[in-house]
Length: 413
Figure 1 (tube, rainbow, N blue to C red):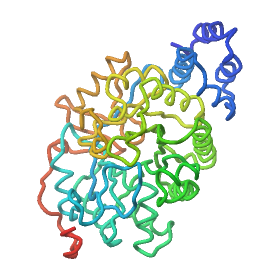
Figure 2: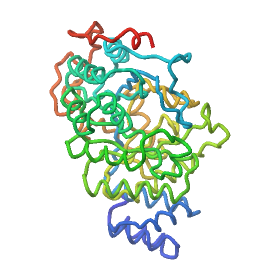
Figure 3: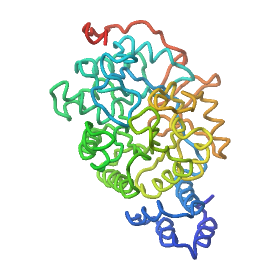
Figure 4: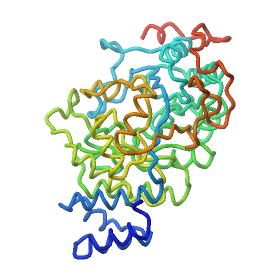
């Protein structure tokens, strides 16, 4: 193992005359890297050395394990009033391709993609201009009733801000009421790059970076864990990336509320920035490696195979990442911007992907505890919840017991 005394000595010897030697000594000694150290790592041409150092830190934390979960994406609407230059997925009302699911339709959609005993629903959508506050409460309540024990990871910080505005409520009130309805944790999307200069270009109408962090802080205060992302490869600089990582690190010092960090590669195709060149594979791996080394207080750095591809995701498990996110079933947002990867993988395909990377697959739940399955692959325990023997079968897709009423304008949007 890279964290054995012999491995440490080999690492120190390998960098003895390298410009990276001071950073290596810090990492070995568990000292925090400075922003200047991060800039050095983003600039170094010794990529093999950078990857070896990130892998050392990753193996010291997680050994040979490669995490994943069996999840399903649910996007109840792609209608959004925000005009983000980075997005190829959202639609304005009245534009072809726009849709909004009624609550019962969203529940049926979640059930239609059921396979392999899903343990998490990942729920995000557009900032719909007319959906009422009650829609979000009713949707969570219906999903919670139908999918007992399944973890509901719902609504980014950007969406929480919008839902609060729609309901004319405070952020604390909104988080508390959504949590009571079934919101178990929150995705990390919408963080993009916190620096205002960058946000003014790629997502000018979204909440600020400071607002994103403030909403995450309130989630954490109320016991709602979140993920956090960084969108790289648009108009940001290395200094902007480091600033983003440092702000995440400072928040984690304060709240301990981030479950994992997900670097997201910007896909320019189909966006207002189609003229930009997408980040290459080495840059993808560099971002993962530097993130692993900078985020010393955040356990999990994820390689999002949907964006960087399955083959590169395997390599990422050797360059700092410990988690391949999940089976997804079925991703639409990145694919709208030209992603050529599969829209979803099976549990067995994920396990093979991790084994091909030389790692041992660990199917996790939302708390990074091992999912327990029977000999037929049915879920027995996940998310600190006991499942019945038949819980992995596709649930009935009929209407919820008390389907929400949605006004005609919304239902037809």
